[in-house]
Length: 221
Image 1 (tube, rainbow, N blue to C red):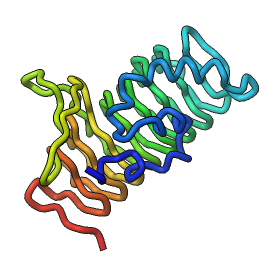
Image 2 (tube, one colour; image 1 turned 45 degrees about the vertical axis):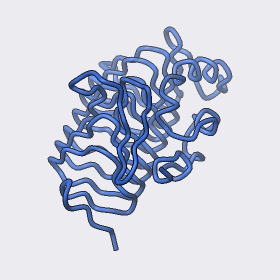
Image 3 (cartoon, rainbow, N blue to C red; image 1 turned 45 degrees about the horizontal axis):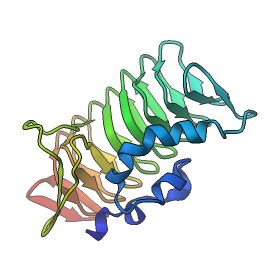
């Protein structure tokens, strides 16, 4: 499925994880390798710009991390990022430059590209969010199927067996996810797409579209 390939979802110049993502075809293939990559990269970061705090946690000196935030390694917090009150970063997380992680937002095994916003009561797990993507208040990624089976990526006319139990959402650049939405396991959202508030999304949503409901996905003009 061409629309699900890394090259068609993301501008890799907008993430410190570019070298990792370039090794793979599909973004979910990256998920098992985030932790190892963070440790490898963290030890090479410019000490003039980044400070190591705790076990395998690297935080840019220009980042604004609130005292009440919790960050478990391995993790990299990029330049000018903002980690707000009671953010819960559970490890295996890359927060891009200028990104915002908000009040009571929880992250686990994710890559946030530069200027991503997950600012209000979001859960993002086993996911990759592209440049300038934004999750509205209370929107979440669901990363485990209710039957606990392996996640299958389902397009309109084909599907891909991932062999992975935990996959959240692969969100392209400049995607807007409406408040209170749930992105079900294995959701892929193409770049420049808008998801209506209170949506339950599954499968592959095309780029440059507006998702109103599963039966009404219209092209942007």
